[in-house]
Image 1 (cartoon, rainbow, N blue to C red):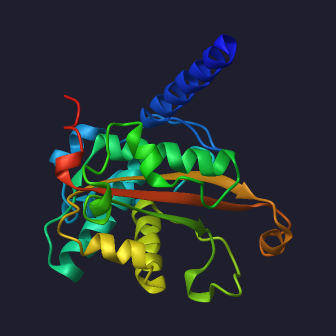
Image 2 (image 1 turned 45 degrees about the vertical axis):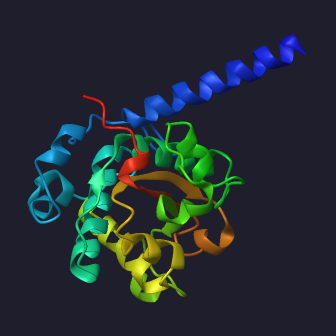
Amino acid sequence: MKYIRTFEYIIFLLLIIVTFQICLGGTSQGSKSTKSNWKDSMYEKYDYISFKDYEPANIKIDYKNIDYDLLSAAIFYAVNECRVSKYALNPFKYSYYLKCSATAQAYDMVIKNKDYLEGGASDYMKQYYIKAEDPFDGYNQISSYVKVAVFINYNDVHSPKKIIDYTYNGLAKAIMNDIIYTAHEASISSLDNPNLECLGCWASFYYDYAPIYTEYNDKQPMPKFKYVLHFASAKVVPANPE
């Protein structure tokens, strides 16, 4: 029993270390890390309007050398633009801890090759001290949205013709359009819920080798992302680290 507990403790520490490395600019399947053009302190400098003119976010994504922190920021600001313009609510505040919990979930989804994981977002949030204070009122305190985004022509989603060379802002906009187009209940209810004030995002890259996709990509694996949005009330989220 003693050895089993020691082994479980070691596995837990390894999970925390891997997630911490990802939050600092780690990697996902099929791509390597790169020096990021984005730092957490920049969330205080930009909003969803000024970020549109941030030059690094408007260059094409190199899928072999992805700037994950920059992509996370692009998704964050795309969500905020929708939040303000469509629902007339204050923009979400950036949360480092929600980004880390979203990172851990997206990373696990790629590694385990699953679209959804047993336990859900709340288990990942708990690792970063984010927990609904009242379990019977969790809807108003924490929420999440998980999706697989395929690199295809979104205008022809049922009969994809080509992979799109997205920019960071372009991919973030496509993701946001997809959320609105599918009218996913969890995402819409999070966007227009004034009790959810904080947001953290992440997207993990991988290749899909399923024949249904490779036939549209010259017999090559289809590049994809699994992206995760974690929302929470400000009262259950720790303050961002200095």
